[in-house]
Image 1 (cartoon, rainbow, N blue to C red):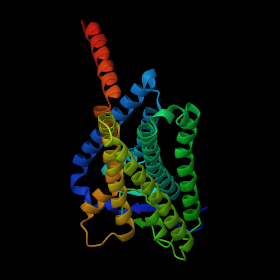
Image 2: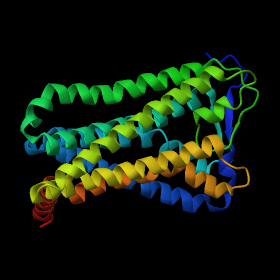
Image 3: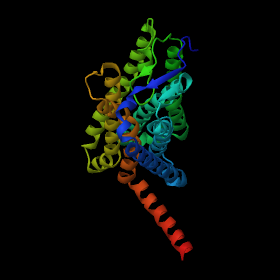
Image 4: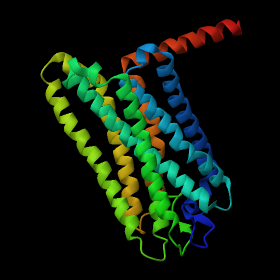
Length: 313
């Protein structure tokens, strides 16, 4: 419940976009279309092929669905604000945007942990793979990878909504929880504590991934087949993990420790990098590297081309 008199927030990050609004609007539409195209293509490819109904591809499908979910909370509003003379967002709309964008980031990381665990079982315990990564367990893991982050973000938003605010300017292109918390008039110790606990929790995710990859590398080096499997399935995961981690680190460092001396356009790039790069590169990376997906997508493209060619004749 909003305990302050603030009813709208002003997104002051758009002050650096005024002279390039048409160009940025065009690039935004192109980028969003590309995100929709590559993610939906990969989702439909995995759903339509029974051979791809395996844990690794199910986790990848979840990752793509999450990419669509997160960008839906940013791009439409961002495109509208680029062409608008005023950059105001309602209190409720702001909290909703925070919820969508940052639950998306948490789901992303949770899914990447599951993918690392799946690769660990596949390479280090291949004989146990089908019993460990059963259909039921896979379904439970995917559900938890969404449910836990959504519950965490609900807690964060609930705590933020109880703060009395003494300002309404958010120096970003979108709403972000820490920027709202910094506008509070009173103590924010509870918010700070919960925030640090969540950061620690997801840092533990990174530790789990790192430890699994130490064992993966050791197992892969023992045989040529292991090295091939590692290269085909783990390298794209590592690339996506590095991509997401770097993007989130940019946003975290900027939000909490960003310097006022940094140019606004650089701040803007650091703030939106994790909303643009991962949703594009994740499906492209996996689609190009994983043989089953690449072959299936080529097959579907050929089928579509043949049907279109026949109709056009």
